[in-house]
Image (cartoon, rainbow, N blue to C red; front, side, top):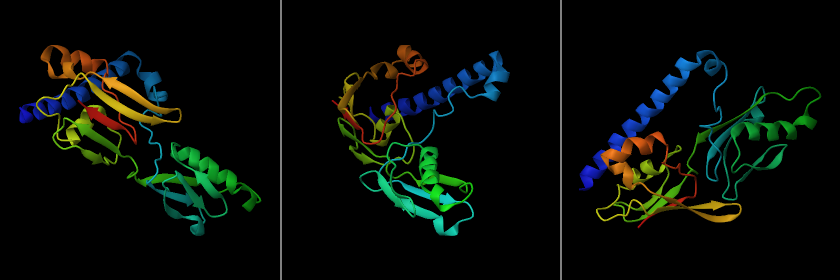
Length: 212
């Protein structure tokens, strides 16, 4: 049973990738020029910095201002001549703007270009508990969806309730519970429809997945 479930999950990943490719091809066929000029959602895959990530900050032409930095547990880091910077939840280009602003009084003219990149996204962590084969904490190093999270946890166990899965998420307003029904994904009649509707939520850093 376990091997069957894992095999189905792998097959669904393939279906999901094919569905996305089909959507992209369809959009290109209908309106190729606008799609090439302006992406539908340029920030869709953008990575937001988490506490524990290793980032690189580079100020062009200033070797003294090149740093490999680990974001502290409180989501901040310190940079020379700028001070403490709030980094958690921000996109790299937002950090670049903060560093550039902080360096303005150090230059008579324009501040050299600032580049911020995530060298190791180890701060992206989540946990899976309940009826899975290998519960625990995970650091995927990239954004994943709920189905991939279950796969990393060894897949659901034999008696798991796939229509009762909950994602407990930390937000500035407090804990939020996201309830998800995945049972249809494991039925031939419902799998394609579920994938086409993109019913599989993405996992965010700090999420706890509970499989009853």
